[in-house]
Image (cartoon, helix red, strand yellow):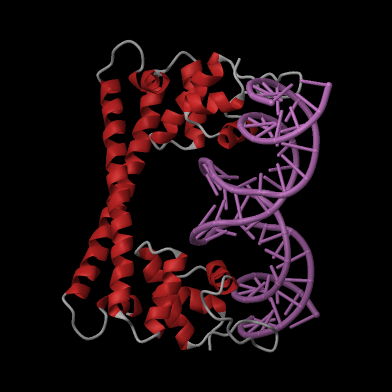
Length: 127
Length: 127
DNA sequence: CTTGCTTCTGTAGCTGCTACAGGATGCAGG
DNA sequence: CCTGCATCCTGTAGCAGCTACAGAAGCAAG
């Protein structure tokens, strides 16, 4: 049974974030020492790592909740894949948006570099 | 002089957002009618459009503030370009991050599609 | 006069944390 | 045993950039 600081190091999840996850019910409230300090078991550490990896893959907290449920429920691969595919599609969309944005921005910067009278960036924003 | 609803339509900036911009000092408080309703002039409309375009290019509110100042100050092209370049660099970074993310996610989904025993996605999250 | 649209203010909510303040505990050295 | 520092606790507020109310008031047409 480890205190929150050690768990934070082991899982690379911020202390405040661990407490936050407890507050929103993403991890179960761990037992406490006599003086009221949290004491985490191996299972909690596993779950926190699971959460961190899912977050690193960009899943929302709500998605993480579902993934945890799927994992606990024996691991329904079809549902899991569907969730991941949906998320992947959103990532693709964001990528497309960001690429458009980059193109537009790069064009303006380029126009700006080639000089001229009025600043092309400010000009584009104004008209 | 137009009321906020008309301005919202003309600029395609949400009514609530216009009021929000006024609150944070991004647009100056317009004069009011006798009954206290905002009345916007052509200049306000221009500024709101300017802001919308800058926001669509992904500039932060603070950046927009600077862009407005640059525009008002005669349009220093060097400074404007620098701002835009910095922003462009951030966009590129975000793109790189998102591409990494997509790769990882796509790999998992693919592994999942080819079937097998344990769900590869849940497995990856757990280990 | 009534109906229904617009606008007003002020406040709370969203996501996912992060950063305090102000207090209590735990542990190691002297 | 005492001191001092690290760790932990709770509760609240802040970040970005809006959006969504509630509850009141004005305005215009029929």
